[in-house]
Image 1 (cartoon, rainbow over the protein chains, first blue to last red):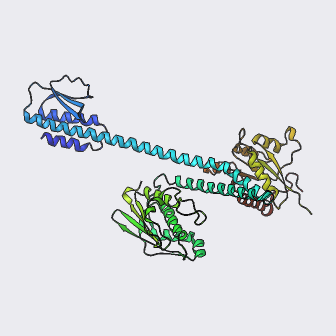
Image 2: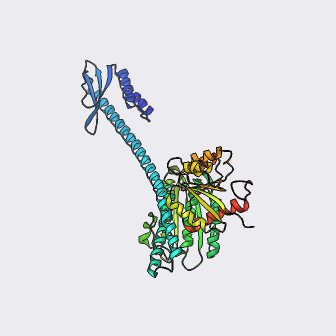
Image 3: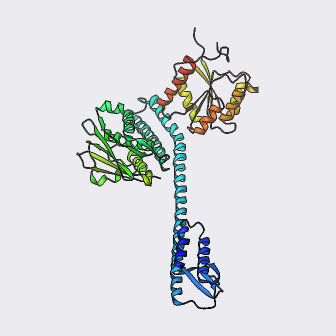
Length: 338
Length: 149
């Protein structure tokens, strides 16, 4: 009877857009069922409730609101029990509403923070490039004009300066690229993974021919996600497989399957492999494991892969040991793509 | 018959960038003379041969930066393309920005083309060669322009 009414009211208010509205309606339902009059809600713990029948709603031991009625007769104990249960339910509703509103606020803050970071990365990168142009340009001019004319040390010094500046430029460009992946997925559509891998491999054609490497894939499914971001993910993973091939030509195998609510992808190579202690570090920004003159690169590839995967609400990890090649696993949960 | 050197008007307020450009233009295989204006106002004064610039040479091409104090690149571009005597001169925007908004704004004001300032002598050299090859070997410019024979 009352419980039915209350259940109906509470179920109606899953959105809890206006909690006061909910409480008013509950009070109305109670008044109707009991015949008590002047049902009203007083909010806040310092409320001065001047009715004859008071039912407090507490949250974490503090009074958040009081349901007030005017009624001469004391209600029976059974009724009081029911009212205590009702107030407990109302307390839960208040808690839930607070959580939702915290969540909204945190999401907003996170979103603003992400925007700020992106803007910072973008502005910093552009503004950093301008003086860098001058450093690189004039160091190179110095190299050209004065090489062999000053002492040997001068040539070496200028060489290091130019190298440093060029490397800084790579880092800035990579930072810009990384920042661009901060926004979550821009589109979500169905696309043929096999076709996408084909396009990515076509772009790496030159490297593959130069190094005699080959990439294999077969029967890849149609999947859901942001195709451009996934293309970048694939490009980075395959390019890495080529780069870290060791002494023999690269042999890379890509395979994937669709599962409940998502899909998974594996990129396997027979290259130099990665020690267990580094399996997590490699996904850090600008993290490199090898000497710069032995293997080039700024260390951004896997960090970007991690970003893309995070944007799709998925996971990425590696299975590998030194000398035994590596398999990079990606699992995408399409429900959780941002 | 020896060809007269190409007259280039370089508009850029940044001294270091100007010097870099001058160094590279000097090594080009196509003979050229470079005149420099430090902002939009000076560029227009030179182009219109105002006052002190009465003897200014009319350029065959204008290399125009966007980010300048006072009259910036876009404003100067608008005025150049609005002037019937000046609008035929190819204007090559060369600037640090690669922002879509700047690119669109430049083409909207009839810039002939838009180039982002290259980094490194190699890149810069290639861009300069490309500009010269395109605008002075491949492309036909109106006859009787400026002071070239």
